[in-house]
Amino acid sequence: MENELRSQDWFGKEGKDGFIYRSWMKNQGHAPHQFKGKPVIGICNTWSEVTPCNGHFRDLAQSVKNGIYEAGGFPLEFPVMSLGETLIRPTAMLYRNLASMSVEESIRANPFDGIVLLTGCDKTTPSLIMGAASVDLPTIVLPGGPMLAGRFQGKAIGSGTDVWRFADDLKTGKMTPEEFEEAESCMSRSIGHCSTMGTASTMATMAEALGLTLPGLSAIPAADSRKKMNAHMTGMRIVEMVKENLTLSKILTREAFENAIMLNAGVGGSTNFVLHLLAIAGRVGVDLTLDDFDRVGSRMPFLLNVMPSGKYLMEDYFYAGGLQVVINEMKEHLHKNVITVNGKSLIDNSLNAKNWNPDVIASGESPILEEGGIAVIKGNLCENGAVIKPSAASAHLMKHKGRAVVFESIEDYHARIEDPELDIDETCVMVLKNVGPKGYPGMPEVGNMALPKKLLEKGVTDMVRISDARMSGTAYGTVLLHASPESAIGGNLGLVENGDIIEIDIHERYIHWHVSDDEIARRRAAWTPIDLGYNRGHNKLYIEHVTQSHEGCDFDFLIGKSGHKVSRESH
Ligand code: FES
Ligand code: MG
Image (cartoon, rainbow, N blue to C red; front, side, top):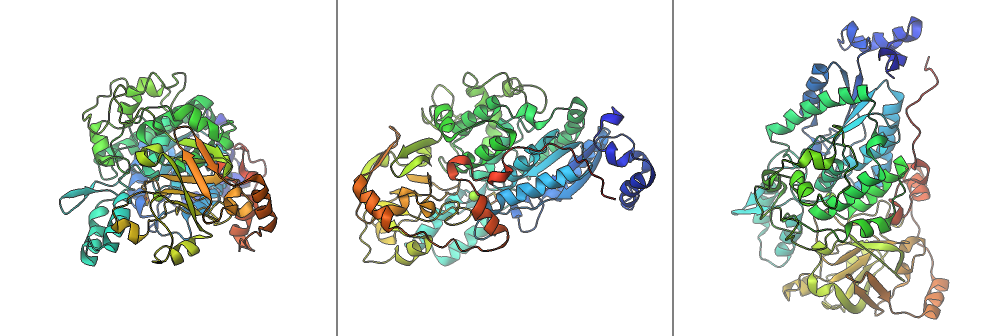
């Protein structure tokens, strides 16, 4: 097998080239035998102090290395662009594809035989899987794990989810500024990513559901010692995967994607899941469409009583048994003929899972909701679709007809939402324009526009909202997102005016903007596009090449894969 190893094309060389490939590496103290036919495993590390959710990854990488050494491999850790959700402006999503390029090129250009992806904060999971999928070596994912449950004033508080509520309470005087500040440290009290079923936990679930992690890894808290044990086992397993030539594309089949869609419905995962799964499928050449999310996932039972849709946190979900319990409960729906990184199916890996807390994970027979998942709505406001998470929406607004209150941009929304003169009540439909993939590059998570104070004070907790933006996985409400085509490129959403009537029926997958075709044509003729504002650098590349939401927002030129071969020498 020595000659089959890709890394031997570097480290196994004789003469000048081999000397160069090995000699400089030896300055790090690697023993000569390390270069002689051991599988070289790249540990793709998104550690960064500005990605706090991944701040414990140096430690985790060490555990992975221990496992790799034990199994006879040669670990080499390397950094890639790391995307932290909370600090990056205007939004980490603007750089997901760029990060995936740094992953893809770093893997291909170096002498790796197999890859361990260390993933945590929202975008670090899809960007790493996308990049690795375009190279297609044996690859395993190690999710970094959620934070321990936060507690404040005797109650559990969840990352993100409670921030929106606290901010409303601060606005209406139910919370003092001092309490608000104290809550900051109570919410984020350990290492790890968001403690709710937000986008990071959704992505960890996705990685496990696709078969890319060892069984049961997605919910283990970052601070739990079992995370490091599993990091060690992950390191051992990738060495075996190299020997078996178990490449990513053998695992990422169409059935694996459908399993991920079904399980995302089961756990009530974030709407961001749609964009990331579409982009990953595009890299491996699986022809997944937006309609598949509704067709495959929207009639699946929703089982998880975890924030933002429920009351518990990821830590409780882990104690209850985690994703393996969900897999077990949903096994009659799931595809069986798919393998995971350990060579077995999800179902076989979960046969012994027991539900230790049915209040956290409901059974398949009596789910929290009969129909979870993500609904795809199409109509004259979004011909290519918009998405909504029914489990996070209000029952009384699922069928609704109301008058549009339109904001031309996020700045317009901020400037006018608290204006006492703003003509708005709880029956209105809030419309936000120019926040899609190109209109506000990266399509920030502003789709769940906060309600005006005057309505919050009346006790209004939800309204119908529509935009081409995204929404944080930790947020909730009757919020239609990802409207495609987006307003900034001439989608009908950009033509809505104050007072137009918009009607939705989420259950029937119906949306209608009650404006005549003649009037639409008149408005279209008068429409002028906004200046997208980027004339150089990455962001120029972004607006020129990003695809629409229903296509996953990858760059058009990144779709597909190029394999791992590099034919030319460097010296
Ligand atoms: Fe990093 Fe939520 S901010 S996971
Ligand atoms: Mg988020």
